[in-house]
Length: 504
Image (cartoon, rainbow, N blue to C red; front, side, top):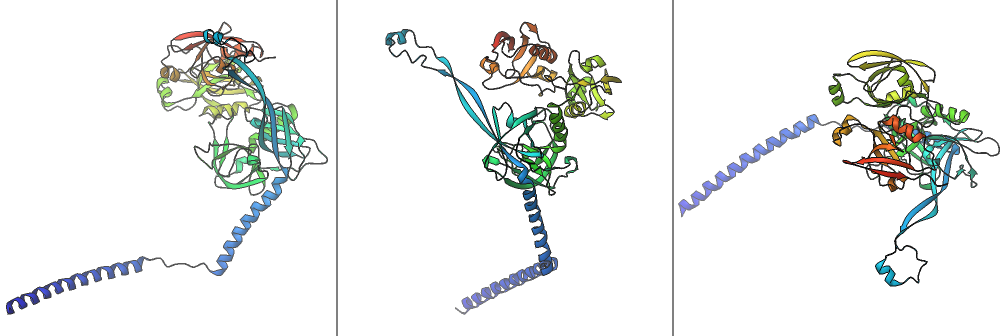
C-alpha cells in the first residue's frame, strides 16, 4: 500500500516537471516573437489636422474641376435623333391567303408555295454630337447619321428640336459634319491637342446614353493608338474607362481644361468586358472637319497597292531575316504604284524617308500626303534594297487608298480580300486567282444568293477575276440597279449566282 502511494507521487512529480518545462519553453518562444514584432512594427502615423484640411482641399478642388468642365462644355453638346425607312422581307408559308375558297384536295396534291413579301418600317436611332462653330456646324460620327432620311438635333435645355443637314461624311474615319440653323450664335466647344495627352490623365465623357441627355461620366486615358477593330479604315483610337454607352457615339471626350481631345465612338461589347470605350483623336478630326466644311469631301493621297503585315513566317519564306516593313500583295492597274514601278512581292521599308513597320502606319502616312507630290519609296526586292520615286495621286472616290486585307468597302453586301499564301494553306487552295469573301452582310443581295464567308469569286459578268484590282475594276462598271452574274467557287466546285441590283 505504501509502495503504491509512493509510485503515484513519483509519476505525479514527473508529469508536473514536464509540464513546467514545456510551459517555460513556450513562454520564452512567444516572448521572443513578441519582442520581434515590437521591434519590426511600423508605428501608426496619424494625419495632422492641417494635412487633413490639405487633403480635403485637393479633393474639393478636383471635384470643382469636374463641375466647371461640365458647366463649360454641356451647352455645346447636342442630342442627335435619326429616322429612316427600311424594307423588311419575309417568306409567307401560307402563300396566297386570299384564295380562302380553294379546294382542300388541291392543297393536298399541290401544296401552296410560300411567297416572298415585304413591308416597310421606320427605324429610329440616337447619338450625340458637339458644336464646333458658332454658325451651327456639328461634329459627330458617320455611323450615327449614315443613310438616314431624317436627322434632328436638340440642344441643352431646349425642348424644340432643330432639323440638321448633312454637310459631309467620311466613312474612312467614321466622322460626319451636320449643320443647323437658329437665331444668333450657338455655344461652341474648345478643341484641344490629342497628341499632347498622356496615359493616366483624367478624361470626361459627355453625351446622351440611352436618351439620358447631358450625362457626364469620368475616367482616365487608359491607352493611346489602339487599332485593328475594323470600325474604320484609319484607326488610332484613344482608350478610356470613362463610361460610354449606346447614345454616346459622336459626343466629346474632354480633359480637365474643358478641351475636346476625342470623339466617343464605340465600346467593347458588355458581354466581353465593361468599362472599355474608344474615341477618335480630335487631331484626326480637325483636318477632316475643315475639308468637309470647305469641299464636302476629304482629299487624300493614293498609292494603289494591297498590303499586308510582314509576319515572321513570310520573312523566313522571303529570306528577309529580321527585316521590318509591309508586303505588297497586289498592285492596282494604272495606279501611282504601278506607274512608279512597284510590284507584287516588294517589301516597303521606308516611305518618304520614314521607317515603315505596320500596314496601318503606311496607310495613314500615304493618305496624308498631298496629291502631286513625288515620294521616295525604299523597298526590298529579291533581297536587295532599291529606292523608287512615286508620284502620289488623289484617291478616287470609290476606291481605297491602300486596301488592306480587311479594308475593302462593301459591294452588295460583300467584303472581300486578296488570297494570300496564308489563306491558300488554310483552305488548301492550288492557286491565288480570284478574291475571297471575308464577310457577308445579313439580308443583302449576296446573303440572299447564298454566298458565305470563304467563298471565292472567279468571275463577275463573264470577266475573269484574278486579284483585287480586277474585282474593283469589275464592280465599278456595274450600275446599282443592274443584276450581276458571279461565278463562285465553294470547295472544289463552282457555280453561278445572281446578285440583284437595287429596285428603282
